[in-house]
Image 1 (cartoon, rainbow, N blue to C red):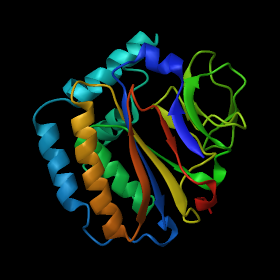
Image 2: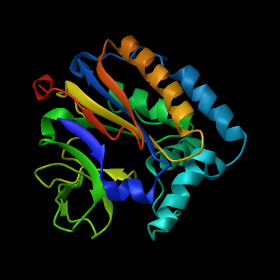
Image 3: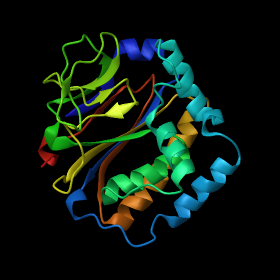
Length: 236
């Protein structure tokens, strides 16, 4: 199994950097009471410094969406949407121990993080422009077809596991209480992307240990190292 970006994506966004991890034992993950409070405190402090749209990492995603011909205020990257919700409500509703943890770390880093149940990925994922035939399943049970040239996370069965790159994930590979092996991807485009992703990697590794989850493999993708591979048998 693999994760990579197409040459078209690299050519359009040469500053892209991606952190990729495979986590196992997610089914048994347990989140301790108040485990995320310190992270939420740091997120609140971050938001006190100014609007989330002015953070360098989010500005870079806004520029990317403009470059793709989309209005950044209409299609906000996932972490900007999380930060806006947290600023308004002061909390995020709980969903799943791993996802709650990743959402908190995503907000603290101001970097979008995606998580996919490996058992529902066919072959591997390539981040690429859509041709319009891909199948995207919404959380309402509907089927959509991405717009041609829209960047999606696509597998070998032509399932789109996201729409508009880091805007919204789909229901096809959502992490649930039944999930055990999960592919985690964090992508950044700003100047300090590599350094910030290294710091995020360290925090996720610590959080995974606290949850009782094993990090099976990790890697950093750049212009010079574009493909991440792991053993399909690990996905169970």
